[in-house]
Image (cartoon, rainbow, N blue to C red; front, side, top):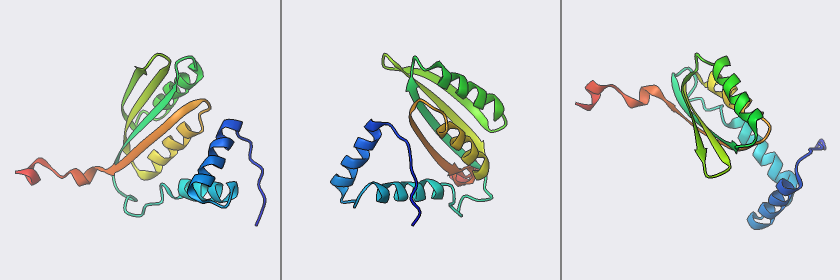
Length: 142
C-alpha cells in the first residue's frame, strides 16, 4: 500500500485519534481511507444520474472570515444557472450561515459542493440532494 503524507491542524488530528479509539478503528489510516471512499462515493448514486435534482447546501463560517463570504458570492455568480436561491444569515454572535438552493444535474451539484468544500476557513458544510420528479404533480395529490 502507498504511504501518503497529509497536513492537518493538530485539533483535527486529535479528533481523529479520539474517534479511532472510541469506535474501534485500528488507527488513523483506516479512518482516512474510509472517509476518502465515502467522499468519493457520495455523488456516484446511479439512481440520481440523468435526473433533475434539487440540492440544499448550508455553509457555516466565522463572521470575521470575509474571504469565505466573498468566495460564496463568487460561486453564486459563477453558477447562476444552478443556484435557484441563496440566503445569508447571522447565527449567534460570531457565525454566518450561507444557504444555497440548487436545481440541476448530479454533475453540476457535485461540482458546486466540491468548490464549497475546497473553500478555506469554512466551519461546517452540509448538503442534501433529492430528485425533483419525486415530488410529483398537483394532479397526483388530488
